[in-house]
Length: 196
Image (tube, rainbow, N blue to C red; front, side, top):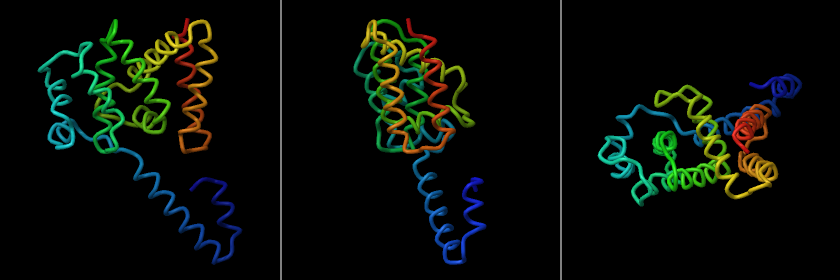
């Protein structure tokens, strides 16, 4: 329980304590239900809601390229299924690592859009233990991809666009705690390092 809530809880009367416990309980349930658990690979490969294209890419049945199959994997970042989204973040991270040319441009666009629209999911994937990939390495790859997209979209106005991206991330974060904002600011610093 955060220290501020502990102080409030100690000072509250019994009715207020009951109300605080209910609020804290539902708040915890809400936070947990929005947080995708990161499973092992077999969970995703056997999941009926994971696309055949995503499974084929993972199983090396095709290489990422500037084509509809690869683009569909990036499109799946926006799935409403929070159980499968970590797998798509994982696959897109792997694609970004080796992308160049038109594929890199598409990856940057998808990465920027995803971090702006789903910053909480993004941060939770990369800022907690994860058995899928080296989160620190790929966190930097995502920052580089977002920076590349900002450089394309905002030539000679990169800092203004970075500020706009960070504002969108904080607005869509759905959390106002200092830790979340600090993580977004860390990501912004990484992006800035890759800007021209």
